[in-house]
Amino acid sequence: MTETPLFDNSLSNIIDFWLTLTSNLTLNSTLLRHAIRMSVVLCTSYIIVQCFNLAQGYWILLTSLFVCQPNYFATKNYLILRIIGTIVAILIGLPLLYFVPSIEGQLLLIIISGVLFFTFRNSQYAQAALFITLLVLLSFNLLDEGFNVMLPRVTNTIIGCSIAWIAVNYIWPDSKFRQLPKALQQTLNSNCRYLAAILFQYHQGRNNSVDYRIARRDAHINDAELVSVISDVLAITKTNNIFPEKIFRLLCLNHSMLSYISALGAHREQLNNQTILSILDSIIAYIESALNFALLNNQTVKEFDNPLIQRFQTIQLGENNKEQLIVEQLLLLINLLPEITSLIIFINQQEPD
Image (cartoon, rainbow, N blue to C red; front, side):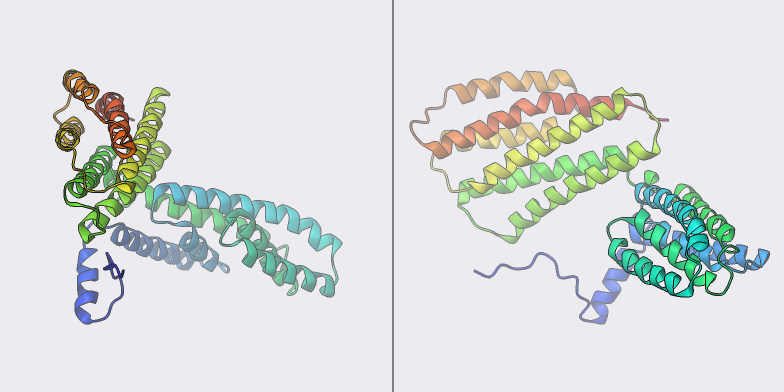
């Protein structure tokens, strides 16, 4: 059976191009913020090169171009690896120029460095920076300038990294647009929509409709986005030891919730047991109200908890394994909610420095 694709990102006509362009003309777009940031970074780097008439100033532009990434965490990681790789390469390259003075030996080292650079450039950035720096030093040494470019190489690398670091921190930083409460709300709301789409198929029968697949996709995309936002929040903010622990616990609980919902989705077939269908309807309403953390408190969750469990205990399942599985997954979901909601309240009340 051929399924309708959820999204076609190919630009087949001018309308597609215009819609793609206009959809990113907002500061909420990561692409637009990164494009503006990169423009400022490269212009600043070029002005510095021209003002100080730096002979190898293009290394500043190249460093800032490669190091500056769309988000804070990636930029921090790249600039640390770039500086470490460059300094280690200088420390290795200095004795190499002494102990391998022959042109043949240096040409061989250039070939080896080039091969290793292309080997590591997509997987190990520190090693890639090390080998490309060695290649540069050895190449300049063939012009009798190997020792002369060592200090400019390190200096320009640090300048380029500093420009990228300042840009990602002060030019519309992601922390202002990727707030944790907003990401939490989007993630939990998409989980509820996914659960509702599954419930519909328990009533109407199994199918891979576009609506169902969109709900499933959005739940997993928002879960991944929550992981990314949490990584950025913990990298940027200085918090007490309890705050990261609570965040990671909430992330684990959300992963568990999504796995329980997915288990229900894997067994979605039309049910004839009206009692279970009635409880499924109640569960959806309960979870949606419980996860609406803007109106939520712990007591509300506890008050809803017992009646739902009591209703489960009165169900007559017989030997229907499928119905037993559904009930077990629903119980697991209910048992997650009190801790999830209390963690949401705790995190939203925090004011990280």
